[in-house]
Length: 349
Picture 1: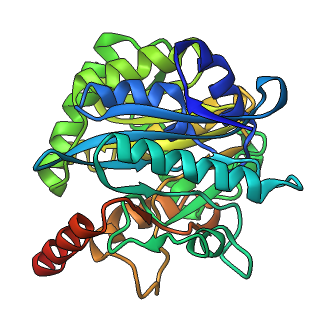
Picture 2: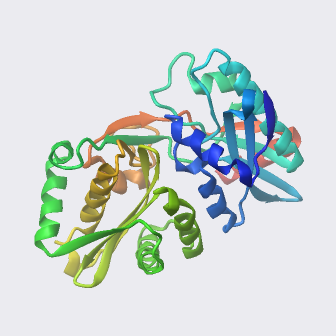
């Protein structure tokens, strides 16, 4: 078994491994690293190969500046490794050793990982195995721990029947109001610009940070050739009023970004419902089975962030089954700087 850094010639094998791992999603694809490089987060890719160069595991680390000549390494929705083989523990240990070695080379304080789950945590789960190897739960999760997975079924009547009554009615009302939808698969610059304008308006209203136009353009350029980019715009007249971006790998996709206008004149247009419904139809038509709504809290969840209530309620209307991930785990590289960083986070609350 060999552990090494991946280079450009490894891209096809890298993405093929991501595609076949059922717990994987686009945040460990090569494209996601390239897009994040435009935001100052340099991708470093650790690869574990077996006999004949077969990929056995991988981790895409994004290197972030932490000040004082130090960095933080982060593997969004990773690492990935063969969890269902007789030597799975050997593969995992090799991958963690490679992560540790590369993080040291990057002068990282910590390597943060965020493995995905296919089932609720339980005895022998992923988090338990990682904690047994010295990792520790992070003070704060870097990605949504809870979500919903929607089975897209036929993309038509069967799927629509799984939605809440309100979602079905509002999608129909949107069409009656004259809202039309179109999905860009090629990374059209004007479509991205229109969506980014909606995203800016939404972020101003809701108070969250957004990705740049350059990030979205790069992501689209990197994903479109393999069929991984979906940008749906809902328009009324000739005006974009809502949009949704989905990212696909193999037969799975995630609802990455959504945006909409909220104006009195548009209160019956329900563009966000039209955009998400159209995205689901497009994905299903292309053979996607599972659609991750990416960040949904359930009613009564004591750990839920109150600020997530609005968009979680919107997403839950489109059905799906709840899924809870292990959360962010820390592979400590520099214990002294890690303690100092943890103290700062505790002081900040």
